[in-house]
Image (tube, rainbow, N blue to C red; front, side, top):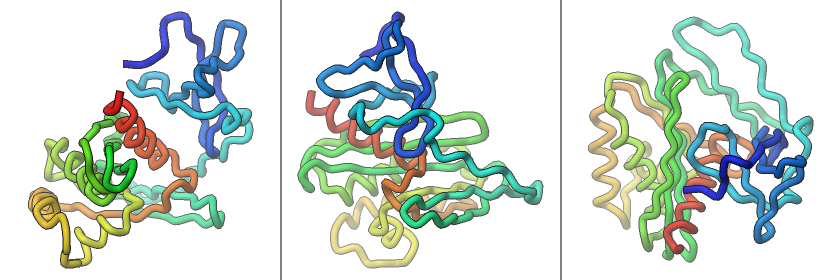
Length: 228
């Protein structure tokens, strides 16, 4: 479900340094409803996101994508730009890698919660936005990872999960002993054991990484839809 119709038009603008499509009327003016404007990162995606008009900028203010550099055929580098300090973090991705971004959100902690997942394999992308009821933010973060792993049919391909949750990554990769959510952590680790090559990459939240912003929107919009 979304708020757009066949008469809607979309124009390019930038949001948090990323190029987005913004809903306009036939005259090219922003369509503002209840102080918010609809945006999409891709016109073919199922979900639309509501942002304040003042958070949008002209398209030419988007941060240019990093140019591809010569890398071995068996791998590629994913460059993550941390806009807070302008540093570049390079993560080498194996050939045929499934890339996953996850996020969880809670309104109240505990309170109404949602998860966002973005799965990428080659040119294929899948978004998941799901309301999970009342939970803590940590449970939402872990649940997003669990749902992402459950979506994967191939366990022989390399998988890289990008998350801004130090809590989740610590529990799942550093042998931290969970004081809470033991059952959920056990379920995720059981799923992880099925994969031949799986690892996590820590990213900084709200730092202009487009995919991370997408899953943040998916998680928060799931809460709003769940409360409607």
